[in-house]
Length: 228
Image (cartoon, rainbow, N blue to C red; front, side, top):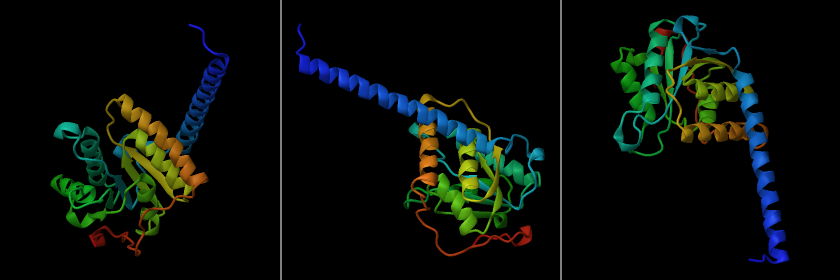
């Protein structure tokens, strides 16, 4: 089969364009990975006893269930880690931040209930109902709940990105790592994209939280850390 010259040129151009795009994606992924990892270097902890004492830990939300209705191991591990951190006396209050986008889905309320079931006093668990994205959770913890220094509770891959976002917004944040099961390919790819997007949100778009609302500072006195 003889390919017409114009078609050959078109195929060649498409191939070159695809190669350039692929190379650009790879470079962007490598650069964003390095930036995020460096921002979190030395700021992530695996043992509760190693975590410097803070007033507040921000527990990042995720769906309690996965496809098929099975328990989400990432969610369960975050709740366990938050309870361990509080019980070890490393934080006074837990700010559970997640998606409350509609009446049928409410991450913060579920997180608070599960923490209370693990023995955390109800008065020491505060809900942030507008943590729709990691950036939203970080900025709202600072601007709505009055925290400029806190512990982030999530898995290591998520903590790295959250610490990067927090530090870029002038927050002195560290991370406490929940148990991380092996990441599937889909989640790994999603996180690579999320890291690149995080850098764009900070350095290009100056992205802001979807909602801020009135100031609700959390008292530093654990006895007064009550849900609003």
